[in-house]
Length: 112
Length: 113
Image (cartoon, rainbow over all chains, first blue to last red):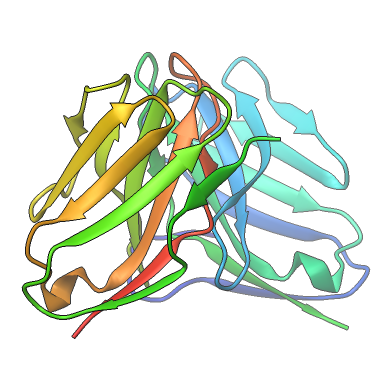
């Protein structure tokens, strides 16, 4: 999972396997969350979002799970592909403002 | 699709120079943000703006200023660049009130020598 610090957590998975990336968010008042994917040398790319009134949301090959009790967010990627190799990080929004707080990210490497 | 563009992908400047980083978004978003990204520290908010001519300090505004003269453009200014401002700078925009996704530009890798 993600953590604040100098070392980026890493996850290596075999192509075709499912990946699970975790994030512990900080504020119980946060009510909107986003997962971003950042490939090397590029800006973060919006993957999927979820609001606090939901526990689960599915996209194409991705699912986000939210556990408000323990302030935990996870991103599941089905049938992981080499193109999924990137850094993934979560962001939390505390309404009504527009600021987000970002995790430091998890580096996912897909082994062909 | 939202498009956020940044004026330069790579920039090398000398200590003491004045540096302008430009960001333009084409989706009529009200909100714009400047972040810097450093290894192990994640994204840190420098400044943001909710409207034209409005600006708010983020978590690390020291050494930076911003300008938002038009809705689509948000500029980050380093008045006198220092080596500790070597970083990846990311611009983002979002619509309206909170609870809307932020969309990022490709980033500018600034090196100050």
